[in-house]
Amino acid sequence: MNRKPETPLRRGWTTGACATAATRAALCLLWGEGAVSRVRISLPRGETPEFDIAHHAVGEGWAEAGVIKDAGDDPDVTHGAMIIARVSPSDGGVVFRAGEGVGRVTMPGLPIPPGEPAINPVPRQMMETTVRDMAERLSESPDIEITVSVPGGAALAQKTWNPRLGIKGGLSILGTTGIVRPFSCAAWIASIHRGIDVARETGLIHVAGCTGATSERVVQKLYGLPDHAMLDMGDFAGGLLKYLAKHPLPRLTIGGGIGKMVKLAQGARDLHSGRSQVDFAALADVLAMPDVKDMNTALQAYEFAGKDMAIWVAIEGRAKVLAMLPQGVEVDTVVIDRSGTILARAGSQ
Image 1 (cartoon, rainbow, N blue to C red):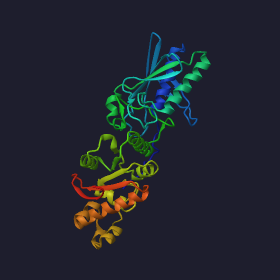
Image 2: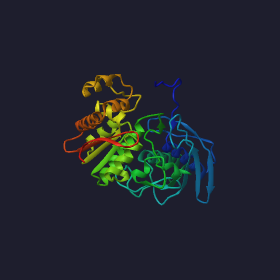
Image 3: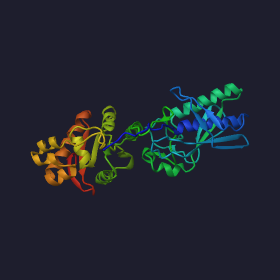
Image 4: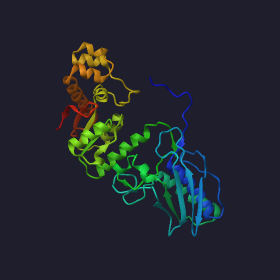
């Protein structure tokens, strides 16, 4: 049984917000205001949070400061990481550099072009605004180079979708609001969208969305797909299909365990166990097997009903996917068991 938390979940701050706060503190050092212990920044929606400054350093022509990221109650891999911004004069305008642990974009389709540090547009805008406002207040030149670093970020990036999106060498500096809202689906779905963007820009004609690691491994091997063709769908079938409906690709494979694929076949778009359930009575009617209505799990139903159930799941799941996509998109489905054995397939083979 899923229970709501007894107390409100605590929100946190994005890497982009932390980098902006670090930039502000570093500029205080560079421009003679000294080492500050706290800074306040403005976020895109008007919030003005304060950040503790955990690191200071200064050298000939440069200064840097660091903020320890607090992701609140969100299970974020960068929670506790040090986000460092080093500032120094530039030859013109605000220039961004990738320091240790920050990746570089290598493939088209992302909001930042290939060759650039993986610092997204909103964090760039926040840092540029900070530079401009402080330069005006202190009568300094707004021509500043900002190097963002995350010590240990290269290792952390291996736990994210960055390698598949063509972001090499480290993390992305992210955020559209500056705020991390705990257990939000938005970040996952945004990553699915970016994966589709990259696939389109790199000319892929076949992509796959799978419900988990086992089905992903099976589908990737089955079709010989490259890593960046594997969209991290997870439970968010609806999030993937709605975006593909507007940004289609020639061919899509949907793969998953029989439990989640039954829910897809029955019309669910969010396949999470807490947000959709198998309708066993309806399944019993479809299979003309009354006993199925008393089953507790999809796997139990499959063990009772046999291959006919897996075939129905593959065919009906494919039909539900096709109904959400434009005409002309090829769709196939792959249904597996927990060991990765293929139980049924439907569509192009």
